[in-house]
Length: 108
Length: 108
Image (cartoon, chains in turn cyan, purple):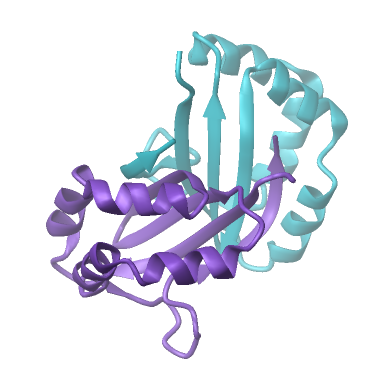
């Protein structure tokens, strides 16, 4: 099965730039391992002007189950608590924290 | 050599959404071939709220030379004329048309 691709966007809170950047320069090993075991690959986060853009690929066959399992990992919970305190959704009315962007194009 | 990754951003002009989306649902074969021959892989364009986000990988060993060669392709020139008329840079003072975002994180 081909990888599923995800492009997502979120805002950084004002003043959160340095802390968010610092955290992501040294992501915890347990978080990296949890992502890997959740079949996440090629995970990238870019910043521009207070926005964060994530691109990642999923190579498993049950994304919801893998994300649910990952979310129960204590170190992942701890990481998400710290990082989500630095973020704010681009759409407060959405159920999504990281908002799914619309794919216009992709090629392998 | 590991692939180089690029995350870039640009704006769509007002009213350009439908046309840009339509064009990218059927990118010309010659443009796809030119990208491939320029050692571009895993090229993705996402849209959110009038912004376009591109993520791509480069697997060659001379990015500037490959881009220069590609830019001389007549169909690529034609494509870029059409698509760039629908775009506007996020930073008018920058030399970049598609503006390079800052990489905060990546994992393979």
